[in-house]
Amino acid sequence: MADDARKLDAPLSPLRLVPPGPRGLDAIGSYVAIGDSFTEGVGDPGPDGTLLGWADRFAVRLAEASPGLRYANLAVRGKLLHQIIDSQVPVALAARPDLVSFCAGGNDVLRPGGDPDKLAAEYERAVADLRAAGSHVLVFTGFDTRELGLLKLLRGKVATYNEHLRVIAARHNCTVVDLWAMQAVQDRRAWSEDRLHLSPCGHERVALNAARTVGLPVEEDPEAAWPPEAEQLDAAHARREHVQWAREHLVPWIGRRLRGQSSGDGLEPKRPDLMPL
Image (cartoon, rainbow, N blue to C red; front, side, top):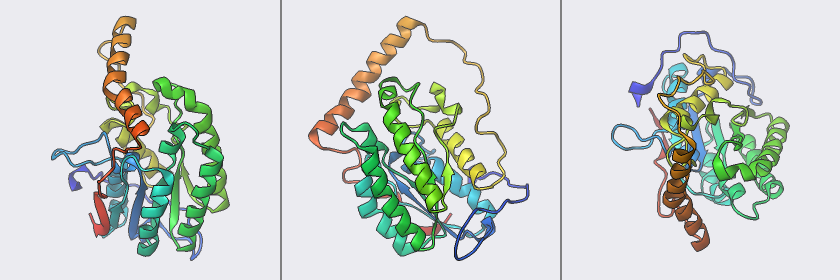
C-alpha cells in the first residue's frame, strides 16, 4: 500500500475537532473505518487482488501527515446499518481511535421499505456514542443517483437521508464528506461494471475528496474533468449494455434480497485491528 502514497508537501490545515481540544492532523494517531462495501473497497482490487478502496487510499495520505498512524478497516460488503452498529461500532468504541469514518445506511435505503427517518435516528445514536468515546467522526453523504440507472428512482430517499446526516453532523460537530455534490462520480468511468460500486478511479476521487475535506493537501482535484472518451456509446449499444448489466448484476442482487442473503455473509473485515500501515 505504501506504493500508493502521495507526497504531501503543502502545510497542513487543522482538522476540526472538539473536546478534548483542537488537534492538528499530525496528532491523529489512529483511524478506524466502518461501513459496507463502499468502505471495504469493492470495485478496487489491488495488484494481488486484495481490495484497496477509498479508505485505504485516504489512510495512506493521512499517514503521510501522521507518521506511525495505526489503521483498521472493519467494513464488510452488504451490511445493513443495524449490523454495522451491532458488530463494528463496539469494536471502534473499544479501540478509541482519534478518527472514525462512518458511512452506512445505503444498503437499507436501497431496500423496499427502507425508512430514511428511522435510519437517521439509529445512525445518530451511534455517532453520539463514538463522539462520547472521544473520536472525531467523518460522516459521508450518499451519492446523487440521478445518472445511476434504476437507482435514480431512489433519489428522493437518498436526499432525505443525506439531509438527516448533515443535521446529525452539525449537532455532534462531525466533519461531512459530501459525496452528493461530487460531479466527477456522475461519469460512468467512476463506477465498476456492476454500477453499484466505484471503480478504482472512482475510489481515488473519493479518497481525494475526503483528504481535502479534512485539510490534507492533495496533488489532484477530485473534481478534475475526465479525459475525452475514445468513443461514445450509441443508443442501441447502450440498450444492449443495460440488458447485460441487468442479467449479470441486477437480477442476482434482487435474488439475494428475496432470499435474505448478503454478499458479505461469512466474510470477516479485511483489517480488523489497529495496525501501522
